[in-house]
Length: 193
Length: 160
Image (cartoon, rainbow over all chains, first blue to last red):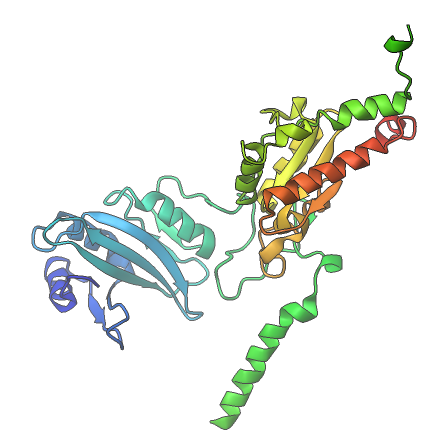
């Protein structure tokens, strides 16, 4: 992303971590950020190498986020190297195809900052992190049902006897208006094609 | 002798005492709490109305200012805190979120649509967040409400 030659980094990862299958996702626009994808099964080894190597080390994990693309889900790691002379940043992505029981190895042992970040991704997307020592929901209540940031999420009707969307307080027409407009627009677009 | 006698009704006397010593609970949920703190601080000085003594426990408080977004996770706690307060007790719902869910009203799966779903509310203060003047107006409205209470018809006495 910043101050990193991603092609060089990808080849270094492939050389040092066998089977990582690192590929560069080049951004279509210079304003956007390019990233590196690796195999989900090798994320722990890749993270270990990224932190401990001497050629292009990354000494900090800034954030972990999830993205739902309906067919698959991505887990994005934003890594950084805090160094006065060579500061750099990297977006590392892994792809999870299983939506029923998505699993990724935890990188908590390499980057302790991953602890709460992984819990948040678990809370919002239901992606389980193997070998995470304390994988609980972090924002939603422990007994909450479903994974809120998934695209196909439908909120539960009741929680602890409280109605989530009370009929007498909602304006469903207004709420669904935007959704309906989007559907109409999409239908018109497909018709035009 | 004449100088030492004041005539009043029991109702008026009790209401006068109650309305001028409303002790709120130290309890803020979101950004409205910042405005509540500003109201309590020197410039707006809630103490002028007898309600600057923010109590750190619900047992000593008379009034709960629900200042901020009530999430479903927090709603059960809000209810517990309300139940822990000694009667008579009053609730001011401060800000759009506590009133009706605010910006989370239509799409926020995690926000309670109005704190009145779990606790009875006496005064609603609109705003996002309300300025300190609005909260003071809310407090004064509550004081007017308390001034007109009748002890024997009081909901607390009736159900005691």
